[in-house]
Length: 109
Image (cartoon, rainbow, N blue to C red):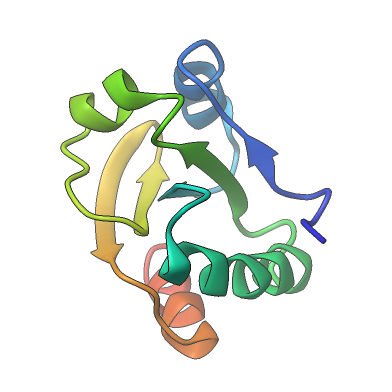
Protein backbone atom coordinates (compact mmCIF):
# COMPACT_ATOMS: atom_id res chain seq x y z
CA UNK A 1 0.00 0.00 0.00
CA UNK A 2 1.32 3.41 -0.93
CA UNK A 3 2.21 5.83 1.82
CA UNK A 4 -0.12 8.75 2.43
CA UNK A 5 3.04 10.85 2.78
CA UNK A 6 3.84 10.48 -0.93
CA UNK A 7 2.13 12.90 -3.31
CA UNK A 8 1.31 12.05 -6.91
CA UNK A 9 2.20 15.01 -9.10
CA UNK A 10 1.15 16.00 -12.60
CA UNK A 11 1.85 18.91 -14.91
CA UNK A 12 -0.48 21.20 -12.95
CA UNK A 13 0.93 20.46 -9.48
CA UNK A 14 4.59 19.72 -10.20
CA UNK A 15 6.10 23.19 -10.35
CA UNK A 16 4.25 24.64 -7.37
CA UNK A 17 5.11 21.60 -5.25
CA UNK A 18 8.85 21.67 -5.87
CA UNK A 19 9.12 25.46 -5.64
CA UNK A 20 7.17 25.92 -2.42
CA UNK A 21 8.61 22.99 -0.46
CA UNK A 22 10.54 23.93 2.67
CA UNK A 23 12.59 20.71 2.41
CA UNK A 24 14.26 18.94 -0.52
CA UNK A 25 11.81 17.11 -2.81
CA UNK A 26 12.59 13.64 -4.15
CA UNK A 27 10.54 12.93 -7.29
CA UNK A 28 10.20 9.35 -8.53
CA UNK A 29 9.47 9.17 -12.26
CA UNK A 30 7.83 5.76 -12.74
CA UNK A 31 5.24 3.74 -14.68
CA UNK A 32 2.78 1.01 -13.69
CA UNK A 33 4.32 -1.49 -16.14
CA UNK A 34 7.90 -0.98 -14.85
CA UNK A 35 9.13 -3.88 -12.69
CA UNK A 36 12.00 -1.99 -11.01
CA UNK A 37 9.58 0.89 -10.32
CA UNK A 38 7.30 -1.53 -8.47
CA UNK A 39 10.26 -2.78 -6.41
CA UNK A 40 11.17 0.77 -5.48
CA UNK A 41 7.67 1.68 -4.29
CA UNK A 42 7.84 0.07 -0.83
CA UNK A 43 11.33 1.50 -0.28
CA UNK A 44 10.06 5.02 -0.96
CA UNK A 45 7.07 4.40 1.33
CA UNK A 46 9.46 3.50 4.16
CA UNK A 47 11.71 6.48 3.50
CA UNK A 48 8.72 8.84 3.39
CA UNK A 49 7.87 7.74 6.94
CA UNK A 50 11.42 7.55 8.28
CA UNK A 51 12.59 10.85 6.76
CA UNK A 52 9.36 12.81 7.21
CA UNK A 53 10.17 16.46 7.87
CA UNK A 54 13.56 16.32 6.15
CA UNK A 55 12.42 15.40 2.62
CA UNK A 56 9.18 15.38 0.65
CA UNK A 57 8.73 12.37 -1.62
CA UNK A 58 6.54 12.59 -4.72
CA UNK A 59 5.80 10.42 -7.76
CA UNK A 60 5.18 11.28 -11.40
CA UNK A 61 3.65 8.64 -13.71
CA UNK A 62 5.54 9.07 -16.99
CA UNK A 63 2.74 7.52 -19.03
CA UNK A 64 0.21 10.16 -18.01
CA UNK A 65 2.78 12.98 -17.80
CA UNK A 66 4.95 12.42 -20.86
CA UNK A 67 5.60 16.10 -21.53
CA UNK A 68 6.78 16.68 -17.95
CA UNK A 69 9.13 13.70 -18.14
CA UNK A 70 10.46 14.89 -21.51
CA UNK A 71 10.96 18.43 -20.19
CA UNK A 72 13.25 17.06 -17.48
CA UNK A 73 15.05 14.67 -19.80
CA UNK A 74 13.79 11.44 -18.24
CA UNK A 75 14.86 8.65 -20.61
CA UNK A 76 14.94 5.66 -18.24
CA UNK A 77 12.83 4.74 -15.24
CA UNK A 78 12.76 4.59 -12.35
CA UNK A 79 14.47 7.96 -12.20
CA UNK A 80 14.82 9.79 -8.90
CA UNK A 81 15.32 13.56 -9.15
CA UNK A 82 16.18 15.55 -6.06
CA UNK A 83 15.03 19.18 -6.07
CA UNK A 84 16.17 21.85 -3.67
CA UNK A 85 14.87 25.42 -3.82
CA UNK A 86 12.95 24.44 -6.97
CA UNK A 87 16.05 23.27 -8.87
CA UNK A 88 17.37 19.80 -9.73
CA UNK A 89 20.45 19.19 -7.58
CA UNK A 90 21.02 15.51 -8.34
CA UNK A 91 19.45 12.43 -9.88
CA UNK A 92 19.88 8.69 -9.97
CA UNK A 93 18.43 6.18 -12.41
CA UNK A 94 17.40 2.63 -11.61
CA UNK A 95 16.16 0.82 -8.54
CA UNK A 96 18.57 1.16 -5.64
CA UNK A 97 18.69 -0.24 -2.10
CA UNK A 98 17.05 1.80 0.64
CA UNK A 99 20.41 2.76 2.19
CA UNK A 100 21.69 4.16 -1.10
CA UNK A 101 18.59 6.31 -1.57
CA UNK A 102 18.70 7.54 2.04
CA UNK A 103 22.37 8.52 1.61
CA UNK A 104 21.52 10.24 -1.69
CA UNK A 105 18.87 12.33 0.09
CA UNK A 106 21.03 13.09 3.13
CA UNK A 107 23.85 14.28 0.89
CA UNK A 108 21.67 17.24 -0.11
CA UNK A 109 19.46 17.73 2.96
